[in-house]
Image (tube, rainbow over all chains, first blue to last red; front, side, top):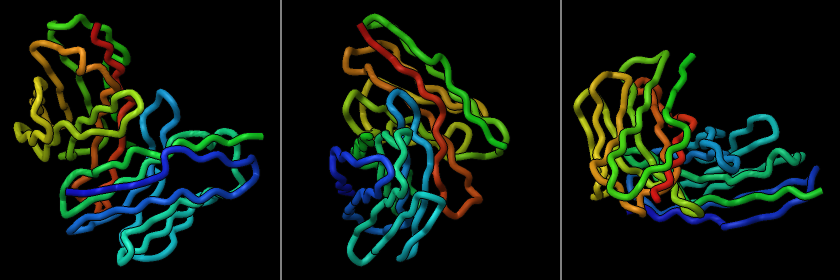
Length: 109
Length: 114
């Protein structure tokens, strides 16, 4: 089976930087994904990592270390609209994504 | 571009009643299709997935079933709803020819069983 852990809640200040961590235990790793989910809405795809290192997309970056079973999502220049849940998901082989329970981020003024 | 539709958006059903939720994808062929459920305050739980017409894999034994009568249509059904079936039902698709296989979600159906 797979075990995916992320913090339940985080709070950060508008304009700041926040790092959301995700650790996983799985065999046959074939990619790590981050999704954003605003309250009452469907998740939207943010990023994908399959090789070690940092992937940058505007204000959002995602990092992966396969040897450590560790990823983080970095959000820069936080805005109020970034308040949402952030879901870490892992793919093994050709199977569907397995999601963590998500981290609820609150951005405060 | 690809779009995914789900209906209805919200549904209130009594215990013991049947259920049919529909999902359709446009702008792609031969997608992988998925049904997830998200209960209040909980993570996304994979219910079913399909790699082709008539091919359904069930992840969690329960009183739900899924069917894929056409390439881009995925249906979630139940003959008799339970209170525990309440939740946010999300359909998703992924492209077979894209190495990353990221999944894209529909807008969801919020089901309340009373």
